[in-house]
Image (tube, rainbow, N blue to C red; front, side, top):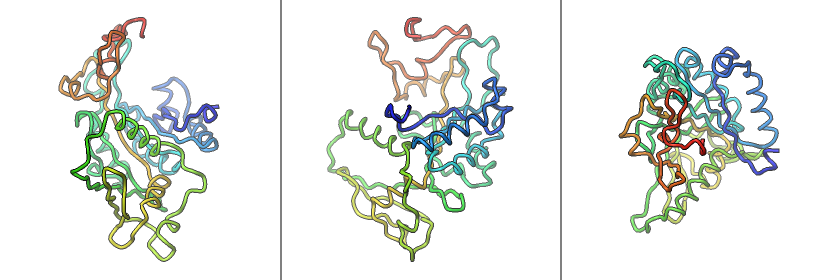
Length: 294
């Protein structure tokens, strides 16, 4: 039904790989049901992004296990988007520092628990919001299940005219749809892209582009790839790993808030930064939303 309705990608809450995590965070044994949901999305041709909420002492030791599930379920799983726990709604006790986990701690945990399969310096800060708000990285998946960071090296044309907001928005939406949408069942293999007589693993790649569109080939120093073949390979044999630290009323950072690039328009026409718009006090009263909106 979701596929027929036009959905292309599912953001799936995926807090861990064992039932004890779900019992503590969601109140039910859901591990098998989560895996079944991924299987059903695969059957229906829907892309999946795993979205784990990470809470210290509950599932911060399963970062590597979640990564393994994402790799094994690729290309149905298109990405993993970690979210450090934030506190909203009724909260009778002030959250302590030990109740929180930071983005650097998640990066360190991913590196350690993956056995170095990913490293902290494989990831980049955001290009839009404050550098302390999120991180992201994209990786090729090898036949053996290893990960190789994708490093894009675009070359911009200084003569390009400024891009209008609506064009930029459409380009961003299109990029997200390509990255997180489903991969066709008959996706091409490494050998199809590189040729039977070439190495099966792409070691390093850069893309030459202009403001009027991508041009030329992509090369790793020994193999030249047609750009269309490279993009198809990037879709069918890659995974994105990212995280975003949402703020709550107890850890609000005004500097981060001023740099926010995701806003919600209120009924009176104000643009409210996303994190501020969702703030609630300890009695579940929204700070910016009206009760009618809530």
